[in-house]
Length: 239
Image (tube, helix red, strand yellow):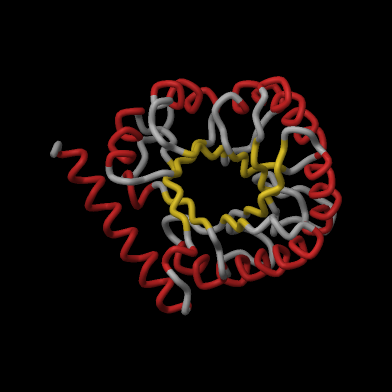
């Protein structure tokens, strides 16, 4: 086993212990929570090692990094998630490899994703990114639709050819009423998910929590956690 594989195996084991402990504390089954490893800024060789170690879900937030990495790892049994703010001019590329786009937050993006999914003959899963630092009808500082816009956007995704409404995603906000209150923020997301599922029963996915706050996300009821640093290490600064 290479040094890097040993390092990643140890980090994965630690994250697994954290998720398991959080599930026990919340009275949940471990299989209720899916780990997504965020591989941004790390090479395809790390993705390959993670696959060998049993990881099945990986995430990227920049298409210029993700597209060549996904192509280099096309032979692996992986589900690719796109989690960054997505510009419409990048949609054609992202649809080429992403199985799930977790950052759907506006009608124009839904239209672009639908057009490219149909053109590529693919079905793309969509999570609505919810901005808990926004007013009822505004967008968040890091993207996302305000809670008041969820219903309209969900209906749009549901009607769009080539797209599948899978659920909701959020990032713990740095400002507003939920700043520093991660579990309350994730609890609010779960309430919004409950509302969404009344009209869209299959939209059961709730993506929340990262390396620093995965326990709070599991406690609130998240079905997916997005962990990067705790698995791969501290990222190098981008130039």
